[in-house]
Length: 402
Image 1 (spheres, rainbow, N blue to C red):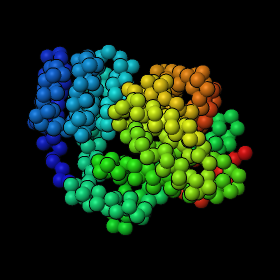
Image 2 (spheres, rainbow, N blue to C red; image 1 turned 90 degrees about the vertical axis):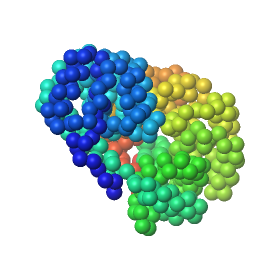
Image 3 (cartoon, one colour; image 1 turned 90 degrees about the horizontal axis):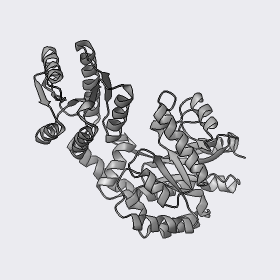
């Protein structure tokens, strides 16, 4: 477990272009006992500060400029860790919430929004929350030796398949309530490391260049679930996540075709779900790969639509058959007009292009009701079912299939 520094030894960066407000924050933090406070009056100074020395909490006023905020977040993300962020502003709640989403998308585990003026009590409470989230994330982070041990074990596991499995999250038709598909989610249990979180081993597979091998393992596990379903006449496609680099492997279409033929399954029962967790390196190569998969009968879904900057270009240029709306918009669509507008626009766009639209992260009955009202085709999330073990998923399909 990493050794944590005392709370008042934490480094705090304050970015504010108003001299009086900047001094006020410095004074309040000093009164609370924080001694390592870096003050910056513009984004360039803030970026230079974090480049010289990692900071534990960032307090930034958004009046400093959206471009400045974005450049600071980009710098932090490039260092591999975006610390807790506390946004402040007197410009209104809408801009604050927009910046909250910006920091969350950049990878910050804790983001708070404080309308100006900020009192000492409010700032202290925000600092408590930020430091608690920081401590939790550092305790959860594997130490270098643990990470190396995990990576070594992962290499072996991906060679043998030992400890790997999948759970399946059902998707249901919002008009009929019938199960129409599922998403395969990988799981790995090691005999000494225990249950390794997907966020850890998927990231490790990417670092090690083993994304393709992990993809093959999940495809094989998904095919193992599909075989008994297909034998019963329950045609429920299963989606498998893949990054752009995995899909650009020229050997991938033939590999998929061989595996499906070996299992006696039609290609349409495996759906390839493109994730946007890495930038597209070559648009021509990706387009060619996706078109080849479509020609061979595989369906294609675009995951997390709206979350990445390339979403619109990807969806309009590539031969997707399905669009999946990012869960952040679904979670916030009841209280945030902008999120609801994005959901409605995505549904309308999918309908006009003749593509199926699926909402992810549906957690409440009211989400289902609103999505039906907006005309969404299908949904997945805890309001429908948690990810299910293969046997339980087969039972679910028997109960909710046509």
